[in-house]
Image (cartoon, rainbow, N blue to C red; front, side):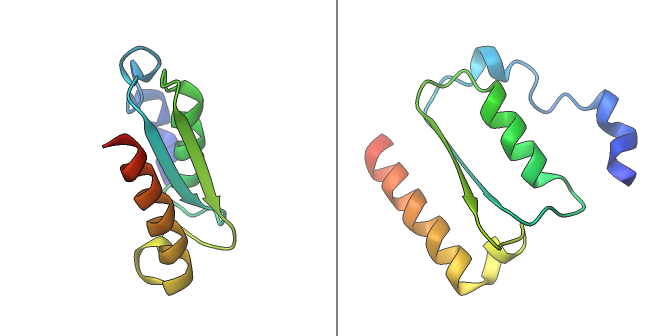
Length: 88
């Protein structure tokens, strides 16, 4: 995969285990794509220092399905609505 070449230089989640302490909701589709958002979502979830964190995997959806496909969007919006109501 093209992006794997850059992985040794990727510091996207640097200090997440120390600084990412606020409530965290991560949503990914179960279909893995070329950009690694599925893997990144799981990695961020594992590294985050947040005590209140959740990872939702939308079955059968890709990263892009979460943009404009009615059912995956509905699932994500319902989860985010609940998350925001609880944490804002």
